[in-house]
Length: 147
Image (cartoon, rainbow, N blue to C red; front, side):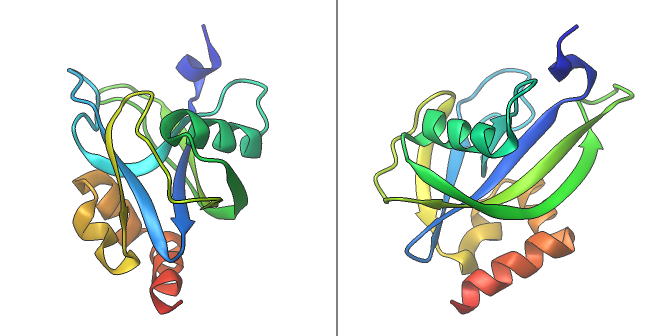
């Protein structure tokens, strides 16, 4: 049994550059919980992988961008897969991209840069709800709006 099967550790990233936030739209894949939705970019942290190293790897795999991890915005658990009695751990990081030149890769259909004011309107329901309901995420996005 892999570590992902036992207790998945995920990174979701608020990737910024020049005042905008990068979000991605997942490819349409049957059975994937965010298939076709716009979301904060990220993914699984592998067993034994340093958190920051995993974040940078995920950003590069999905966007081709080099980045710098600025810090953890939030950490939370959430039910992993409907009907299963286990949780996943999700860290939300602030990541600064070194450029705007992102290209969708991995399992992404598209990428786009959005203004912080528009973030929750642009995200799919799950991520928008988390940004609005999780105090640390909401406050962080509010700070980005003011800059």
